[in-house]
Image 1: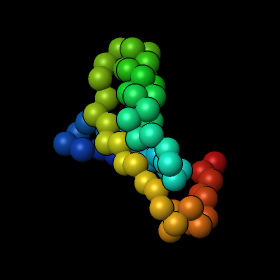
Image 2: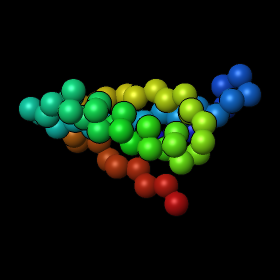
Image 3: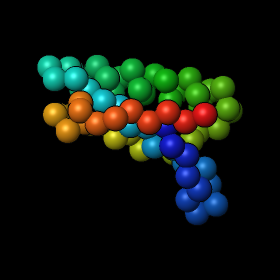
Image 4: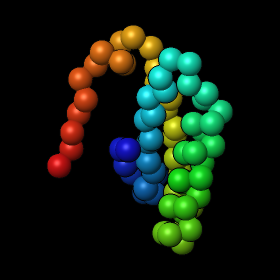
Length: 67
């Protein structure tokens, strides 16, 4: 998850790696549920961009850890 400020409002980008053979609809439903829970917790709706990734290049890419 990355957060940005767009037009003086917080926004989030969620990147999800879908494995080969994975069901993108199921993944999007799970992300939608998580975002709905976040909106309820925050008490406001947060604009979200969901970026689904997959394929050989992303499977071989190094993971990035943020502290």
